[in-house]
Length: 130
Image (cartoon, rainbow, N blue to C red):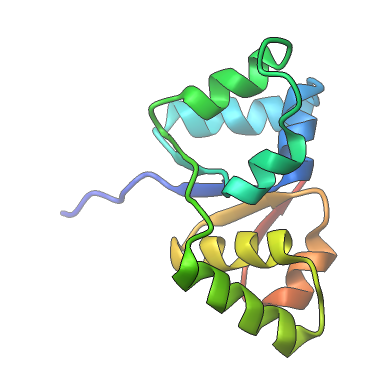
């Protein structure tokens, strides 16, 4: 019998803000994901949207620094794919497009406060609304 690998979870800015503000549903989701060894992906653009003062953002900093958290850069390959997606769906939200593409590429569950925005970008995404 094969083991199933732990899930990958992509977090958007709404999810990180909810986590930081102590949203009960978000806290429970993160704790359960940590319990099962989930990998978290926080796209670099998302981190830039929410990061203001690491000295004050203790809860966020702890999640970002966790060994199971990746913060992938917006490199040339991803940037070109993001631009193509934005052109295809006629949006200019580069950060949301990068979130959608990373969720798709990593076969992740996307945790978001804006599920409609992401369904517009890719209706096939696995989304967990908060």
